[in-house]
Length: 367
Image (tube, rainbow, N blue to C red; front, side, top):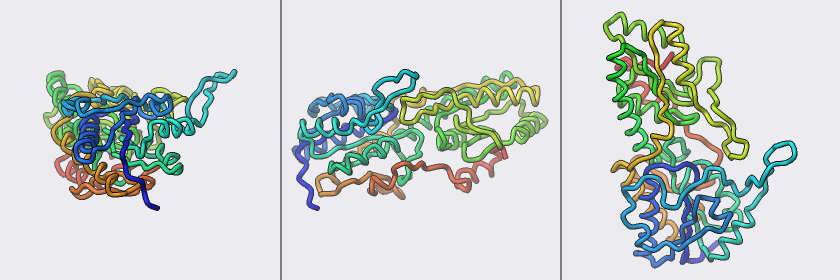
């Protein structure tokens, strides 16, 4: 089926924020405006802006000088799923949901948008499906610090998050060494351990614990004791928020029933600290980096990656491509069917080369 030329383009940033979003917005908007004379419209706060009809025209001046900024100038939301939008609570105190996809489609028609650029992670790409079914051309751009989006080797935002986490772990080393402690640094990542693996390896963490490899408390304690007997009276542990002991479950900090992803993980660092101190007698402290690694200025790699992704998205739109997601594969920017990544999560394989490399220099993975 032939697609109509794109003359008016909408952009939204869905899910959690991350460094590099503004670099992508800038690249999409400026390429569309300068190279193709396409009118660009920013949709505020992700799908929520589409639901509430908060859509504004973006001019080149609006997206100038934003490549260095963290976050997103359009705002974002990780609770606004048009197919399951919370509208209140019933008498039992349970959230009530409504499908407001029709409202979104009316607002798209009202602003005469020919296509949408959806910048987000797995939730955003999954949320694109009803719009694709309705005939809206959606081009996805993979954003998440967790690096867990299927189909791409890397997402923008991940490298900056790893850099921030690495610098934080570096600073913990001096305190751990001075006080002869085990220091545990908990990082984000949900069910995927990419941040913990890369930041742990980059910082020279002694122990790296991933959701994909359930850990043995005994193995970790034996490792800490072994280090102590050989003159290393401290240990650094980098742990993903979704890590869990053998036979156990991830620690849930809270549940938000109104969110498309209601489970909020967190607290495994404190639990492990208590376990290690009780088991070994070694003073142990836990630090949760949390949203710190989401913020700040994107590093050069993410600015360049975002620029390449944004350019390719507009290229797809102007060459008649439909329902694609921009990806990085083997160092090259290309694209895949956006529907191929819906409801999927890219996890760290247990035979990943970096795991083997870290083991070769003496890193413990709790096994």
